[in-house]
Amino acid sequence: MPFRLDLLRHGDALAATNGGDAERQLSDAGRETIARVAEEYLRRDWHPERVYSSPLRRARQSAAILAHRIKPAPDYEILDALLPDEPPDHVVAWLSSSDLPPHVVLVGHQPSLGRLTAHLTGGREPSVPTAGLLVLRFQEPIAAGGAVLELQWRPERVG
Image 1 (cartoon, rainbow, N blue to C red):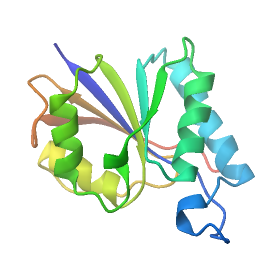
Image 2 (image 1 turned 180 degrees about the horizontal axis):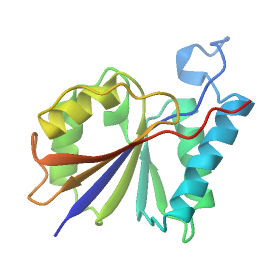
Image 3 (image 1 turned 120 degrees about the vertical axis):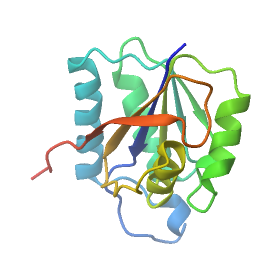
């Protein structure tokens, strides 16, 4: 059965304050841009069944906006393997050992999403701007080098 994996980078975030990098939250522009990503999902009639997010606040906020605006709303969970310093093979191991529905979204960070894409496709490491979306498709079991990058998409910049 084909498996679709969407990789979404969090929206624009504010500078770190007392909570440090882990607690950086989305800017107003970041919230608006992620809402436009969700609108694109609706426009294209995309219906992921699950959304997984890095534990960092800006990624959690991005995932929550996406998950709450898509209808029907997908399940939403935190995934430590999406932390910025985690190697791509940790995500691949998790993906291949999990019982996943046919369409999943992972919300994370750069450069880890670019590295993960290169690892999964066996190709180049793409640059993923804030609120950038990569769509990967697997025909075989999920494994390094087994994906095809079908789409790189980014909403228009806010203001």
